[in-house]
Image (cartoon, rainbow, N blue to C red; front, side):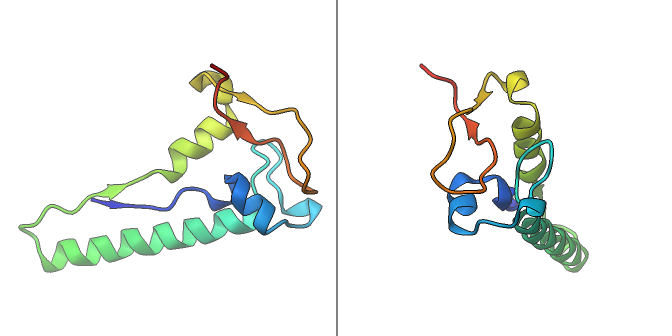
Length: 104
């Protein structure tokens, strides 16, 4: 099992470390599209490499684990997953609403 990268542009620590310009954020998720593009590029190359390895080793089982799309789905629709968006302003600008775990 080779697990792909999550959407880097949705991680609060990445948003704080690499703040983008206002136009760099996806409207629905608030994620940084440039950082997510890096993860998508990596995941595409990983899938391509796994395909090559499958052809070279047909008797081996090689699987790709997609973490990117489930995380994007959760960030885009947090209520479906029992979570909420934080409406507390961040100390770093511009940072969109962050994906937060439910309060316990």
